[in-house]
Length: 57
Image 1: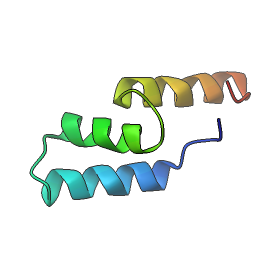
Image 2: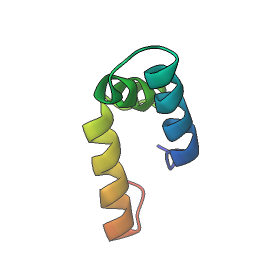
Image 3: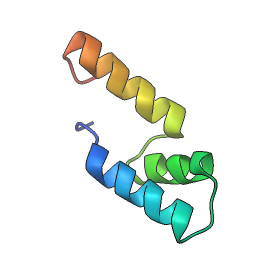
Image 4: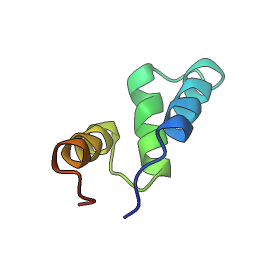
């Protein structure tokens, strides 16, 4: 897996929330799935693991 694109994640989530009427949680889950993650929790956990280990899981 490649390193997730945080800017794309934030932009997609913002658009889904404000233009799509989703809750922030729903919008973040949508944005995470667009990058191949099961949900936003998995997305943020992957990033946290990457930051602490400096290795792509």
